Length: 392
Image (cartoon, rainbow, N blue to C red):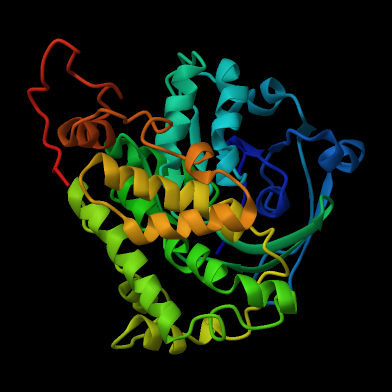
């Protein structure tokens, strides 16, 4: 049962007016919450400024439908976050650092910020970007492992909702503040549950396995058919699945090098969908939820433009930083760069942009678990006393 607003319910700011942001804002407003909606582009939200109502539709019983009236719609970051205890950042992961810079001067003590989702390294990058922007407010940054909604919005005044996930892990920096974040979220949402830490939520980003490599290896088919095939069923043949298994193994190895156990893609398919198989190919074929999902219409897709720079690049960067090289992942990145003409390795998330470049394993774990300063404890005059990096 979705929670409805009470007399003491907080104002919630939704930052981002894409499909996910519009759906979340509408869902909250329909349930009676005061919702501030912010978007950088005026053109996207101009109709909502004139008439701040969003209609939510669905073909599935039990999902929220109706029309919600928003409290405030604005391009002004100061106005968007003022008076809000909970800020839900719902933008493509490639925009996280930019959003952090825009709102940094306007944040106040006690606010909770949740990235929906963080992809890989989102919370680390967001917190580091706030610090670089001079933010001194005592806020909590957290990330969700995935977006709560399956949804689509073709215009800012309306969204269609296909489903709401039953359980979405959320982790804060530092990890011991996760229960506080869950309590804040629980005033409005039932589905968010405590995650272990932001390394786990970041590296359990299964989209990093299933999206970019399948798109790259089916690039000719996508271009020639304009996506007229089933992405997971037709696009993942045994040879493609073997490539995904290698990408997955490297992702899990990065987590192990840092000291955290990550779920394999086969394990995730079983937990999420009850789909089992002796190989990843068999498990994918056993997942009824993948049948009927079409491929992207073109190579101008977030499977490349978001999942490569905000998922594969940070995984590979973490691997290089902590002694777990990712040659297959690097190959997929390189091919994606050739296909799109984008320099994802330079523009994507790296250990430096996440604020962890030069941190030893102990320092990284302290940052993630305890909230230690995101800077090395050593100087240029000598070695680090706690350097626990594994050499390649």
